[in-house]
Every structure is written in C-alpha cells, then in structure tokens.
Length: 258
Image 1 (spheres, rainbow, N blue to C red):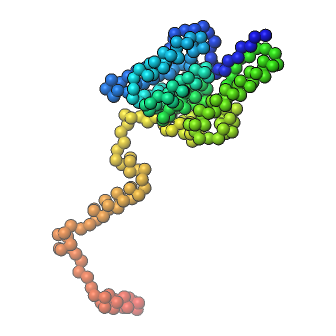
Image 2: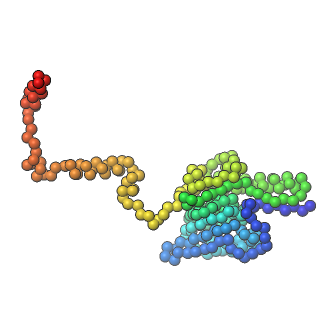
Image 3: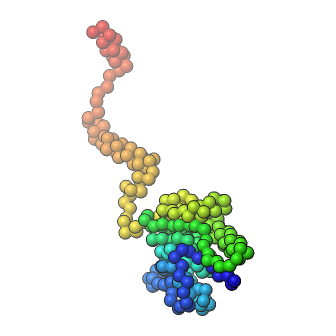
C-alpha cells in the first residue's frame, strides 16, 4: 500500500492549496520598523501544495531592510513550513525581535528560536513536543515513519539547542513530556530572553534607585547629612561651650561617690 507520511502539529489541517496568508506585514513609517504578524496555524493549506507561497514570503521579507519585529500567536503547523521560515529569519541581515503575545506552540516555537531576541508577554505560553505524523502501510512502512519522525525531532532539537544552550538530552526529555512554559520558565530554560514591558509606564528615578541597595543607602545618608549639618551662622552663635578634660574627669570622679 502507498504510504502517507507527514510531520505536523495536532492542529494542522490537510486541505487543498490556497493563497491564503498566515502572515501579515505592517510598517511604521515614522520609525521605519517593519512588523510581521504570524497568527493562527502555520502554513494553513498552502506550503505543501503551493510552491509560490514560500517564495512569496521570502520576497516580502527581503523587500525591505533594517530590523524587524515578529509577533507570534500560533498553535503550530507544518514542520517543513516552520523550517523554511526559521531559515529565512536566521539568514536575514537585520535584527529579528520575536514577541510572543499569546501562544508559540509546536512548529511556532521553532520559528521563535530565530529571534535575535525573544520576548514573551507575562501571560504568554510556549510549548514544545515531539513531531507527529500520519502513516499508512505495513510494518516496514511504519518503521520508516518512525525513523522519519526521529530525524524530524533531531532537526527541531538543533534549533532549540542553538537558542537555549541546553543539552540535546534535556531538550529531548522536555519534548517527550510536551512541556508548556510560561514566560519565567521559558527565560529560565533559555527559550526566551525577557518579558514584554509596558512602555507606557514610565519609571521614576526613585524606582530605578530601588534596584540598588547601595544607591538607596547613599541617597538616604546624603539627605540626613545635609539636613542635620548646622548652618555657618549656627556654628558661630549656637555652638555649645565645652569644658576641659581635667574638669570633665573631676566631675566623673565626683559622681562615683554620689
């Protein structure tokens, strides 16, 4: 029997060819920054059956220059499609800032690894797992399908290893367990570099000082010294009259017998 083997995420739809884009470009004319939005299932009905689509994505990517921002909110998709996007973004000459605002799961997490910097919203999630496939045939065909999935997994580990610096054994274990990561865990394991911050909230000087105990201490001491230091007039007019050491010792000796 003929075989049908395909490495996909659980949410992949096997449909007919379509020119529907799963990406959208936007450009800030003032800042000159291009933004790429990857929403929904990666390669929805197009990459396997329509050879024009990958070329179109590459043409749009290379139609401009400079740094780009890539927003990702996707449950995954075709492994081959993710590999193509990953390779294009890795080869791009400008910086690629990946921002995960919702979900970067399965194949979408591979694309995220192409970021020069990967940032996650505090509420975002990143998920990695083993590739899946559909196979039809006898025992030999099933063994070939298993071997294919093993190679696909190794190729995915390559991307995770380059980004995180984790060992291949640890990454493989995380994939076996279908690991879900919030922003803090993704940063801890090296899959992300930071958390998206609200640029609208300005940070005052006091907030900045709060991150440095030494700066806070020095600032407090300077305020106390400047406030308690007497003015020049006070030193001259209000300074207390002192006594000699001999007089002071006599007073101390006298207090012993009281």
